[in-house]
Image 1 (cartoon, helix red, strand yellow):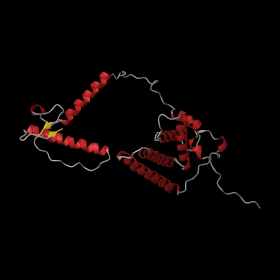
Image 2: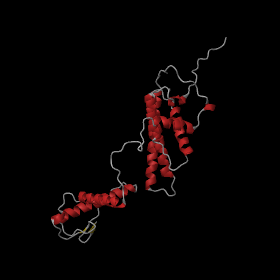
Image 3: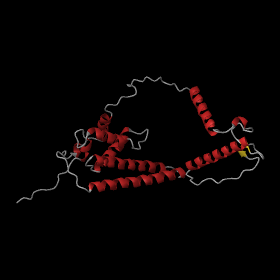
Image 4: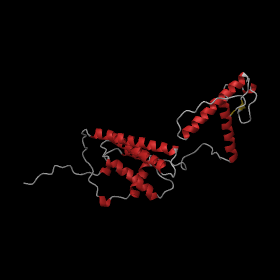
Length: 267
């Protein structure tokens, strides 16, 4: 007597990307679009490279075997964390001489890798619970006839752009601004004036003597109340700029408060 095969037949895990797949095609278009936007694509690079990278991301998402829309979202978040980790690893490790900036990128890569692991664990906990498989599971895929990466990406690109109106075809009622060097200079001058006004907000500049052309002041033995308030503001701005510069260089320690004496320049 022959034994009855009770094993579940294999299924096409890439069927989640098909127009007639197990999920709503509009939902899958948005999920694919969101995931591919997180890819650290290099520009410029051969189109075949970017196609290969996007196709690999789709294969990895299908390898998570999402059974419903929630598991698709968990998979997309896991892949996004993986892409963030890979981008930070590249920025932190592929330089000749590591510095404070590269150290921050390595730390961010480790955090993104932990986020990837967390998302995988969340997906595994959810998939540990039974979920009914819908009737009509697509047939197994014939790998010999599988389309190449460029074919898959071009088809998905066409579907994701459904309803998209290019800027060339859109009706633009706003006038086009021609950014000439003179206009750039005017904008920079306005920004500089706004910055100076914000820095001096609340100060009596008109009655403050001794302000240098660059905005600094020489500390006096007996400053007026207006000069004292101005120098206090300048000192605060000086330490603020120093803190911002330190943070850009990876230094988190607060700067040391330095004493000042008459005759010192407060920038």
